[in-house]
Length: 126
Image 1: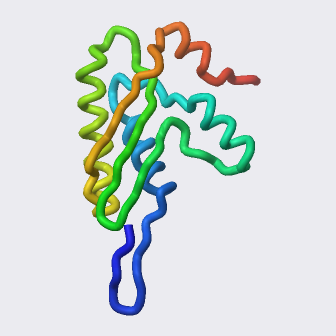
Image 2: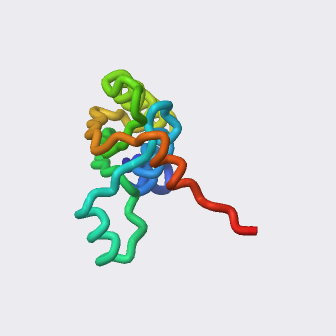
C-alpha cells in the first residue's frame, strides 16, 4: 500500500502484511499450524530471507490478496475453521493496515492429531 501524504508517502511492505496474516491465522481456534511447502523451504535456503511460513500475499495500492497453507486440528469441522480463519485474517489485515482484502484463499495441507502436537512441543532440559 502506498499512500501520498503531505511531505511523503506511506508504503506497507508485503512482509508486514504476511506477518499480520500469519499471526491472525495462528490465533484462530482449530488451526494447528502453518505449512511451508517445498518451494518455500527452497526459497528460504537460497535467499537467506526469513520467508513467512505458509503465507503469501499480493499487496497493491489499496488492496491485498492473501493465500494461506494451513494444518488443522483433527476432529474439528474443516469448513467452519477455514471460514473463521478467513474472517480473522481479513479483519486483522484491514484493521491494522487500512488495505481492503479482496480475497483470503485457504489450502488445507494437513491434519494434526493430539499425539503429533505433544511430540512437537519443546522439551525442557534441567
